[in-house]
Length: 145
Ligand SMILES: CC(C)(COP(=O)(O)OP(=O)(O)OC[C@H]1O[C@@H](n2cnc3c(N)ncnc32)[C@H](O)[C@@H]1OP(=O)(O)O)[C@@H](O)C(=O)NCCC(=O)NCCS
Image (cartoon, rainbow, N blue to C red; front, top):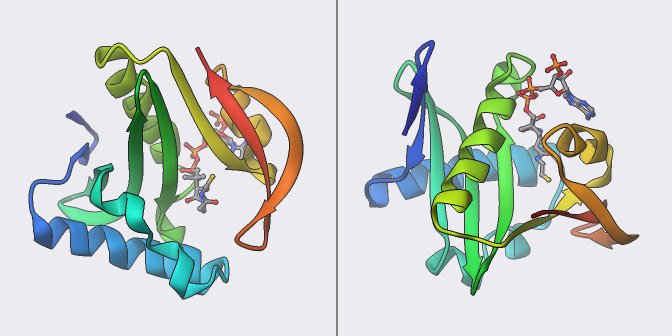
């Protein structure tokens, strides 16, 4: 768990927190970014580790870690609009990287939204391959090992 300045970042503890994560994803991906509702939740939700971000005990962000052998895929990283630009995103990504390193993961990858390419580069992620469209949004694969 990561805790400082009233922010807590940790795995969800129960079904209620999973519902809170789904609600945040709905606000950000479906309403804000116009991702189709029927693809936002998928079969990997059942097998992924879900991370919740609480600010003063209020759920404000989320992320999902999918372990695939010795690889991990980071997905659904998001913060409610009013909580962006305060360094919380940086805290989340650092938490996710630390979590994966503890699990002896050899490569962390993600399909990054293209507009965040330089954001993830700051954590050491590199781009791989060409840009592609996913959920109607331009993406690029990024990896860290
Ligand atoms: C992605 C997201 C979680 C980042 O969180 P955030 O709290 O806004 O980011 P931070 O405040 O931690 O920013 C950290 C640093 O990255 C910089 N940064 C922010 N957005 C950036 C961008 N698009 N490109 C490059 N740098 C960026 C900030 O200026 C800051 O720089 P500093 O450390 O020099 O001050 C947030 O913007 C979000 O939820 N977006 C909508 C959902 C989304 O697109 N998710 C990504 C799916 S791949």
